[in-house]
Image (cartoon, rainbow, N blue to C red; front, side, top):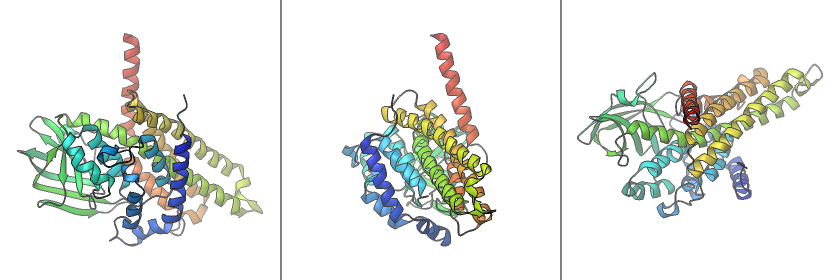
Length: 375
């Protein structure tokens, strides 16, 4: 079975690369780092919306283009290459997917067209501080349709118009849609290792909320949403890893040491080869995940976990080794190595850390083996 991009998707990817190479240079990303008051690049966001990227996986009946999730993954890979400073992941990979997966018909009609038109920026609010978050132990509570509590850190929470909040209920835990422009909601920006994807503390004081869909099992809903979001995030990580490799190759071919370029030294060759191998392993897992996501395959939880693990490992390793290949210059502000190092660490935690996904993968594999044994 061929999991690679189709010819049309290759063309889409090439067009996206040309656009982002022109409109999202490192100077665009650096503007966010240099100015704390800028939380994301609004001009780039507007252009991305005009290109239809925010609605690429949303059905046409809800204002999207209905192209599919593999097309979305192709775009995600290119966004990862340039460390795009926009709230695309939280809005498109998470919030939009949650509405498409579990939302009622009314919620889909009300929210999906706004996402496609760029009028809605979404975020996911689950964590309540340091440590592993368990939905059943959430301190944020919903009583009689009113939400109270605090969530932190929330990626893009300070720029979002809507949040998907995990909160405790009388029956356990549920996911709730909350408008962030209403009275009783307080947004407080937080310091972040990667300011190009901002963090916030969201406080809720008896605010109106709406349950996501009709299911009362918020933990099960969240698990499915994370599986769906993990695949395009893995493609962002692959795009970032590929750019790190290109930068290291380019620098090693120009940097001289002891009369020859450092690319001639075996230690550098091995370093670059290791980056390439991890990147290609991540790509193969991500392709499987994209197929499972696009076809609604039962293998999605396993494929998503494998893609997530390989993506984290590939991007973090590539960012670190690329910086090391640049030597002392790699640690300076003038080089772009730190942009990818920051983003690799942020993406490694945005949907839950590596240990969580390893445990999910093991559980899925054990389930497969038990099913085979029963058969």
